[in-house]
Length: 155
Ligand code: ADP
Ligand code: MG
Picture 1 (spheres, helix red, strand yellow):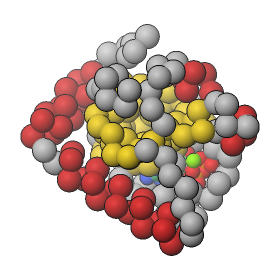
Picture 2 (cartoon, helix red, strand yellow):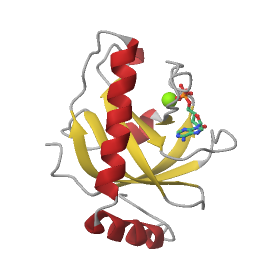
Picture 3 (tube, protein in one colour):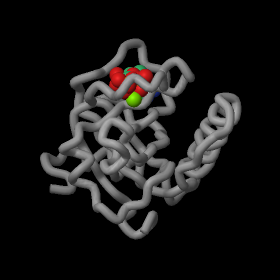
């Protein structure tokens, strides 16, 4: 159930998250609105994915994505958060984030320490970078770029 919806395209506004301090850990995650999260297939597994992302009409970058249980709704709703593997000068709340999800890295895990969490995230980022350098995934970066010109994705 992790792979069968892939590649998965999604576009939506970047909203405020729940201040879990992702940015303080060095991995800010751009959150999609509840409405966009609801539009995801309900049987799409929680966990960590990789793919391509762009903000507004900006460049396409590598990303890692978390589909997780949303603590704000007592873990009955999901949250979808994208960490773009790029350093931005400014925050981009309110901008339109376009993503294409291409592969699955791992399921959600609980970590016994902050160090363990941070090192898992660093490993996820390295795995995403390696995967996205494969020709089959680089090819989709260009397709994605052209798709961005379209008006509707997944709707
Ligand atoms: P929040 O809880 O509001 O989601 P985060 O600490 O997760 O706060 O930070 C996310 C915000 O950081 C994004 O909404 C975006 O505006 C900004 N940001 C800056 N650089 C990045 C990046 N490389 N990837 C994702 N978001 C980024
Ligand atoms: Mg966030």
